[in-house]
Image (tube, rainbow, N blue to C red; front, side, top):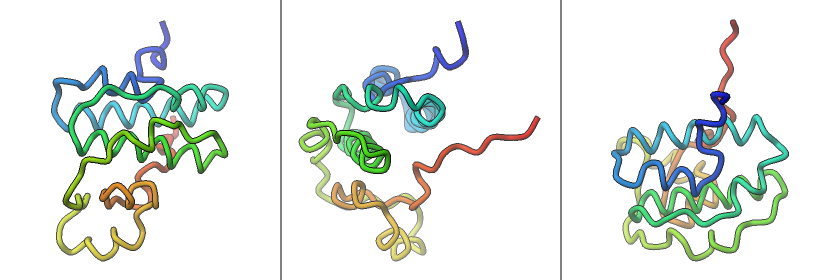
Amino acid sequence: MSIDSKRPRTLLEISRRVRDSDDDAFDHAAHEFLEVFYGQPEEREAALADRPEPLDPVRDAYLAAVAEHLARSFHLPTPEWSETHGNNLIRPIFAGDESMIATLTVHSPTAFRRRLLFVSKDTLAPPRRTQD
């Protein structure tokens, strides 16, 4: 079994893996997902296709935003579930302290902003590879 086979290959797998876990586990699973997503172009559409299991308003919004943003970025069909999943935030969430609010508001990708999540423009950038 390869290391990639242990990493979440879909957004649904992320939700199943972190259902009863903390934010660190979610962040780790999301990072692993992105490594697989960027490394396996032939599996990208399938990685976004299945609706994740409900977690909580913030993580649901994040997964829906990831699906929409990656689909648009890679000219894939935007999953229908991403339009209805993760729309329960009533207050904005900023991924940074107060000094970052203006920057995050301006630079956050549209898929995140419309769900009241304000993140860095590089949130879904391909993970950097370290040189051996």
